[in-house]
Length: 265
Image (cartoon, rainbow, N blue to C red; front, top):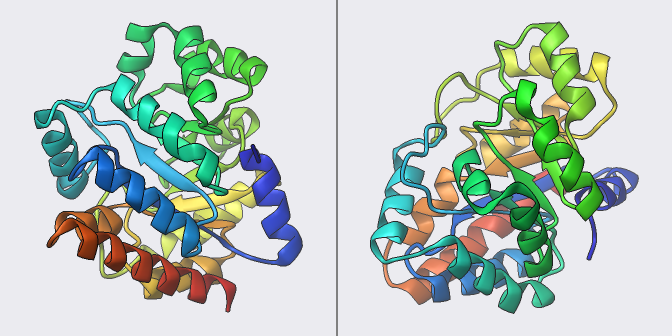
């Protein structure tokens, strides 16, 4: 299994900006999620973020919240997501990064959770509600088990906090492009370009920008700012929710390919 750090190093050597699409496990079904993972991998995804449905997703906007609600209503549980990963991950070359909240990790037990997701084929982990002050409780065992935990930097973070987060973040740094929740936006906040410069001054780790990229135009903008990765969530989730499942998976693959084209141009 290629680690998150290794894949970013490969992309840097080729001068490429990474494409990191996000989908919610179990929406519209686990079978569609499996097909979507394969399609994303075949159409240019360098990493894939897979959201574990959660009942109180504070960082998620309405599109992803609705997807999580639908998945939970169909009975999708963490064990279902792990089984899905176990079945599909051997076919996927893109490192899979799980996106989940801290409570499910604590409920399962930190070490057991990390071992379970590693065994299922995950390479990384994003936990948006993990406070920096408590990060060691997850980062240390994750490093021993071989899961890279990526931390988030908000555009309002003071430089001192940016540096502290950058020092601890594993794999890459997730730079949030907006204050607020996830969601598609027609324009990216240009202040993020200045924040990216500030982050570059305190670390040489890869930086992925997310929250708000809705299509190739915004992805191209993020690449132009010098980001190492473009994270696209709500737009991918919306595509999977529209129309019949086979068509939705095809549309997602086409969309992924259009994003990757501008990131390698």
